[in-house]
Image (cartoon, rainbow, N blue to C red):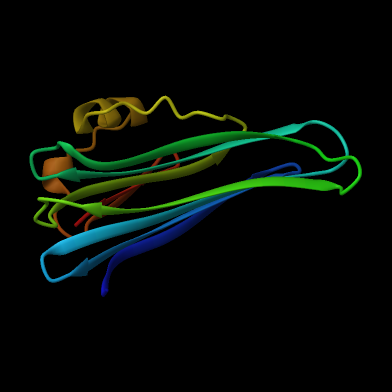
Length: 150
């Protein structure tokens, strides 16, 4: 399947590292998305937290796909590192391929508290971002969020 959009983002604080990625593909009129999230805690004590959010909104600002996963990983005194990962592949039905994506990877929290509507996400980010004006290929980065027009 030809790739429409793909991105990888990392965040690191102290001995905790998070990495998230997505690939949005299209074949004919069908779309699919593949997301991957990985969290690692190094050291012999403590815990590491992290989360990844990726969502696709259609032109009417309705969610057509959403991934929102957080982990807490306890240190492994014997191995010296502990990790958790997750991946998901989904087909997106009935979508015309136009809209907006939002993406964030962050450590130190194991949940995002992400809202479910485009307006609420704009308010949540704390910026006066108009998703209507973003357009295909437009890109905004604010408060750790990557917002792209498709």
